[in-house]
Length: 158
Image (cartoon, rainbow, N blue to C red; front, top):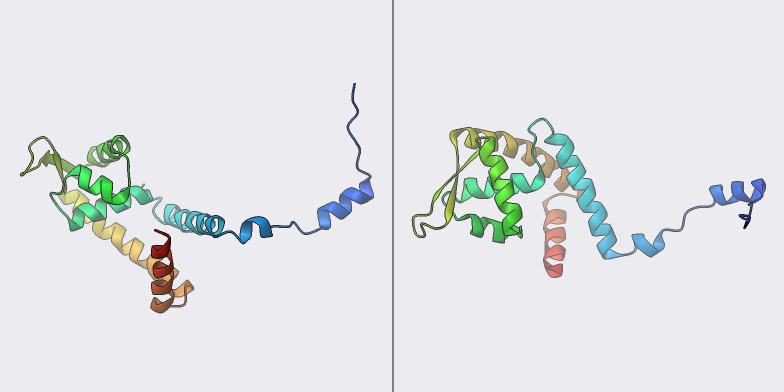
């Protein structure tokens, strides 16, 4: 039987007090983007917990609110959501009576999306919460100029 090497207690204490070297990750653009995204999503999830709303659902609802009658495929494409996932997402919103599907006027085989009256009221509440969160993020970025700079930099990556 092979014995595991034992670290002397004094050495273990020194290792525990030594700072963790993180430069290999914290200096990476992708890593920092992901950490920022996780932080923003965590704030979103905490803020929208009472509304039982996830970021993708919010995006779908505001796009439908701003573009009533657009086809499911158009909204899914803009958001980069796969068709099967989008169908499931819309189905959940429809079950909550926030969204309704109807045959598209220009293509009867496609579904056009609309907010229900309940969905319209819901989006008003959700936008108010999101606007407050966005204002806080913009403040943390140093104001509108900081936000515009960040968005410009992110556009370079996409």
